[in-house]
Each structure stands twice: as C-alpha cells, then as structure tokens.
View 1 (cartoon, one colour):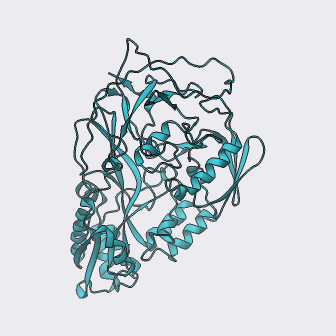
View 2 (spheres, helix red, strand yellow; view 1 turned 90 degrees about the vertical axis):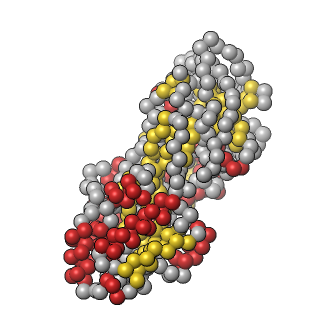
View 3 (spheres, one colour; view 1 turned 60 degrees about the vertical axis):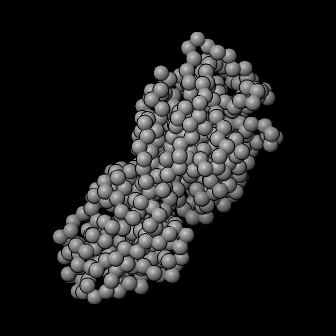
Length: 488
C-alpha cells in the first residue's frame, strides 16, 4: 500500500468579483494574480505533479489528469449514469457514420469564444494522447463545417457516440511555457511561484463558495498513482487497483467505475464449449456474495455485460441471476461428467480482490460437481498464460469507454475465449447498426453467455472533514459537485 503524503499548508480563499453582464471582452488572459488575505479565509489544497504537464493531452500522471476536469470542459459532460449532457456543444445528430455537432456560444476563461478550430485542435491532440485515445478509437477524422459546426466520421456505427465527446477542449495557439486555457469551472493562475485554481468568471451558471484552490506540488513519483492526496490536502482518490482497501480518517464515499470484472472461458475446453454449461456458471455465481465478500463491497454486481449504472439500461432488469438449482439442472441435462477433468481458474494473485474472487468461483464450481483448482500467477505473466491457453476459466478485467462499447470484449484485447466470433458478437454489431434493439442483443447474450459478467469495480474518494458537501463524485469527474462544497 502506498503511503500517504502529509503536507502542511495553509491557503487562504478569496472571493473574486463576477464578470459584468454581456459578452466577455476577449482580451489576452493574465494568468498571474495577487492572493490577498480576507477575513473569511478558509483552507483548501489539492496536490498536483509539478514535474508533469498541466495540459490534459501531455499529462502522464493521474493526479494532473483528474485536476484538469476543473479547468477544461468537453463538448459534452457525463453524469454518474454516463448520460451525456450538453456543455460546449448545443446538440448533435448521427447520419450513418457521420456525427454533426453544433457548438453553443461558449467562452474560454480569457474571454475569447470557443471556435471549431479549438475543437479540431483538441480532437487530434486527444487521439494522440495516452489518456484519451481509447475513447476516440472509433473516430477517424474531424473537420470544420461552418462557424459553429464540426463533423466527425466514425469507423463503425455507434448510437451512444456522445458518451465519447467529453474530451477536454483546450485553446489553440498557446506557447508551451504558458498555462493552458479552458472553458471549465476554474482556470490556472500563478502568484509568484505558487500555482492556484481560480474560479472562471466567464463560466455561466457556476458560482461556488470555493473561489480559489491552492495546488501543492508532489515531487515523489511514488505518489503518482494516487489522484489526490489527503493529509492537509483536500481529497484522496484510490481506484483500488491494488486489490486492497485501507480505511483512512476522512469522509469517504464509493464511486462507481467502468471497470468490468468477468469470467472468460477457454474455447478448447471440453466443458465450456457447451453454452448450457456457460449459463450454469453464470447462474451459480451469487453476485451479491461476490461483491460483499471478494470485493469487500467495493463493486456493483452485474448480470449484464453493461455497467449497471448506465442510463440506457435503467429500464431493464439487471438483478442478481443466482439460481444454483437451475444451474445444477443445466449441468445434468448437458450429459457431461463434471468430474472427468480438472477445471483451472486463472487469476492474478497480486490482486487481493481477484484472489478472493477466484476462491469463491472455485467454491461455486465445486457446488456444481466440478473439480476446480485456482491457479494464481503474477501480473507480468498473466496475459501470456491466457494467450497460451493455460486455463479453463480466467478472471478478467476490462475498462469500458463511456459509450459502453463492448468491442474490446468481442474483438479487441480482452476477447480471449468464446467472445470473438460468437453469436453475441454478431448480434452486438447488428445492434450498433440499428437493426435490432438493445434487449435483443441482451437476450442473445444471456443464451450464448460468451463470458460471465460478475461486477463493476468501485473507487473510493475521501474528503478532509473540513469540507462540507453532497459528495457525489462520478467516474468522469471526481469534482462533479464542487459547487455544493463549502469549507468549515
């Protein structure tokens, strides 16, 4: 477990005057300011990596990438249900493989208008970046079509494309040594050598109690995997990727992520090439028990391959499908002899959650009459073991993009096993092309069961007790509700 960084810093808040009504002046922004003390001062500090870039497309640390959501808006922003809400964009439409986006009348923090040229620049910067490239993988090119319209072409159909239009829009034509400019809730500013986030007075409908946030530099690379740090800083974010959770003295809330945990099958297995047996495996897994036991409740059970929080499936039943008796019936009706061969469950033993899940899956398979044995390997050799087929079932994890694209599980890097070329794969493409409804794909998936969804992992976000607020972070923005925060 990475140790927490303790920082001793006292930063004073100031109240900035709101800009006057009417269109912003459009002058060159001065990113320096004088930080005067006010009688109603409070303390709020966030950590950032000084050695890393503040440009969201050049940043390598998760710390700076998370902070950038305060400074830069996308065409759309996503809420906790991954529903796209207009931000810089006013509306969009899809015509085949072409997406037309109409821009709203939005201004950067320096008062200049966000133009299609800024969108174009940001789009290609996002496609070239490590952090944003995966969500734009389906996009081919963007071109400007008028004063307030951009057109984006796609490689394949996607009815939920707007979920990927949240990449940050950065102002074009800035020098490398200057602070990058966005149209978000705050802007970067300096007071001598000190760096701050100051409220963006050109941002409509945003008037938070917290007007200024100090940024405290983190120099040690040991802390780069932690988005933010608690101590004398305000927030600690832990995605629990280590598979362990250690409680800290702070107000802590769960935050759903888009990391799907699933069971993959070896297509050459004499057991799991039968879809009824794959169905039986799904039915014998009690998702509630898997979540509360293996993941210590830091996950949400998933009966479907999509994130259970996703707005597009809110009307569909996605409860716990656990039915051990039905699972046993399917095994018996299949005519196989479950004890005729050993079932190897492959997992990464360096992750505590997955180690516990493997033990639970072993227990479930034993209840169906199989001779199951879990086989833990280190992370470095885990993928090679899968590629070499040294498993019957493996415990996998796939991070879905915000449009809930399942392509990585069917034809991409997570498609080991039965998924690629399966009935579900074909039906999924039919759904994307608009030739069937999402429920039709789900029915095919439940019958085919090319892999078994188990749960989607959570992160934890902890806040210093000096902050009061609703505390409703979401996967795309841990500061989603910052306007509701106040300082003791």
